[in-house]
Image (tube, rainbow, N blue to C red; front, side, top):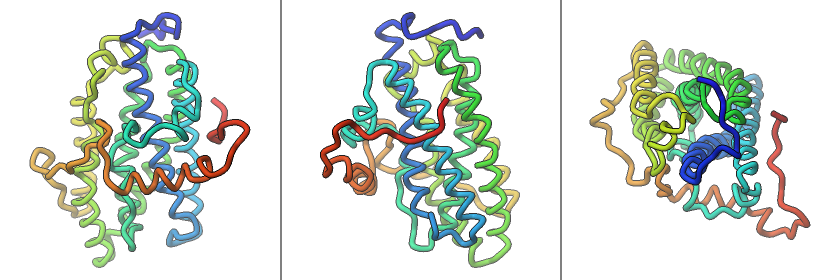
Length: 273
């Protein structure tokens, strides 16, 4: 499919659909990165500390790619992040949850579940009709394989030790229902597909995700909840409903912006597109 649409080609309905897609991508990456930064200097090895810091930096960079596209549609960065009410964020509840006290296993399981989904979502954007989006997808895709491989390597190490295997199993049971919210549809899902912004449906992406994560986790001797039977959390994330932990995190990362009178809004740092 040719990327033949630019901003000037968008209808009102098309722009609303595109905004929903971009906010979901950006919010997931930004909040996931915010949580991952909590592991700096606390990871079990120097190598894993550096690796997770690099993953977080990549995710902040990806968030910037999508927030920049929203700014091209008329938003400011402050409106996207620092001044946006917490109830308007549409990230999955998977990425907002705090880590347990012994949460390295939680962090590894979370990044694995998230990064497999993120790779699939980005692949579904490769043939997008929206040219500015097509121009940026390749950069994000190039970095996602490393993220997933890092998580897979740690999972393989953790399940060898009985005590950590038990914690990994607990993290899978706890996080799997939240990961399913990555594929929850929004008000403009039909428009995302009809305008060619994404080439695969969310149910298809969910099925592909399950075909990857379930066999891999089971190959490690882990039990994976049945997707249709998993107890879903009350907060879904995509619809603006969130856990209490999200509001605490939001207050933390917007604190400096709110308390200090900047002459101009803060700029999210990241690599240039």
